[in-house]
Image (tube, rainbow, N blue to C red; front, side, top):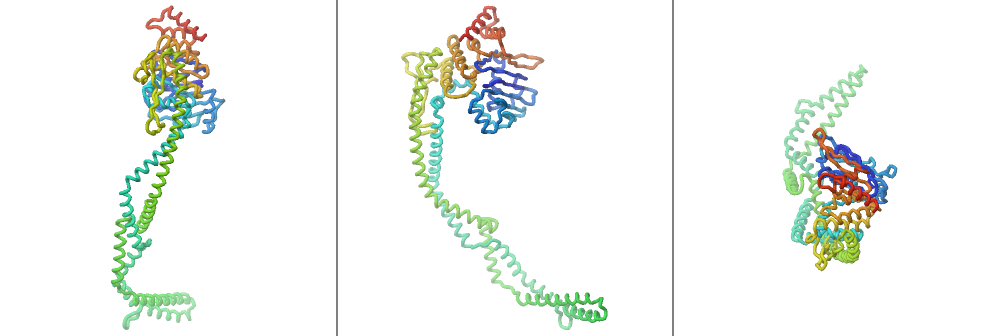
Length: 556
């Protein structure tokens, strides 16, 4: 149950703390006092959407904190599964809304996602508002109501998963069949590209090596000239000694001198070594000169090969490595396309199998729904009779249809509000007050199927008065016997039945609007019930009637 609610800087609420009781809690107040803001605050801690417009003007952020006790098992299990430690069997949810639109959520001090907050909130509180009546006007929503009543969630989930798988396979097959012509063109193109690249027999780095060799051949004349010049300078020409001979002579002279001056020995040896090294270089250069020649035929072959590689680069990639990767990609794609015929056969088999399973699960759903419909009509009719609608006949109409995400039939709730008249769609004959009572009857029927500890009814008594209002109040009080009820109402008959009564009132102080939530008892409660009953000033007689109404409510 929701034990406490703290609200700060939310719309016209500056700061308020509401302490709830188990049983039936009601909120009353004049139109525009801020009753909806309290519901908005509760919705926020349940993971509802929050807008920066909710933040009170001038404040940096709005803060809402809800405390829950007497937690049901599903909530405990979810908290344990997500590593949330409960403090003294209490769950605390905090939601903050910044003025810039950012929001944050915490559960027992731990940051959580909004999706997790929604999942947790769905196990704590169920809010029924005036908009819920619109569900009755939308026949496509009726199947959800019946499935909830029949507790068909597991079977429906299995069907939906099977249906989605069948639809996915069917879609893949349709795409494959539409692409047959494109597939043939693709096969031809891939085969051509693979053959073209394979015939080239490319090697990684081959182009760099060929470019270097081509440059050498193109510059061979200059290279030979340079080598000859180097050889001539080292070897000499005609009667002119070369560097090699001069070094050798210098080494001999220095060696002779070192025989008399030992300090020159090391220098003589070094010079002799240089002389030998130059002689070796002379031999190597001579070898290059004798072997190097210009080969126009080889250059032509290299340029043809480089041109072939260049054309492939233009088509398939900027480097040989990229061309080879393109080849591998094409081989893989070709293999997949060639295997697609096998895949297509497999998909046809899957489609048939999944369709059969869908049909069988849809058949099971239909049977379960028809059984649930019998109990649903009986239960809701009983609720309606209590709510002064005993003359209403309720019927669930099934209409077979093609397989869709919820089964193989559409269904709609039909009612007849007059004896002897055939049932018709709710949207065509139900008034606003009748819609409220029918929805309340359905909610009561559904409430027996879940373990949600707190139910909130936000002005579900719209369009109702008199005896019907009294009956709605009695139903809410009856429900409060086994769970917590929070109810926003504008009817004295309902307010008088509450165990705990809050008045929401608005005031203006120093040009600012403030909303307060006051817990009423005794005379304050009597005056509030009298105010609701009156159309003007509260008279002593109205006060007496209010006290009498409250006393009678206690004895119910």
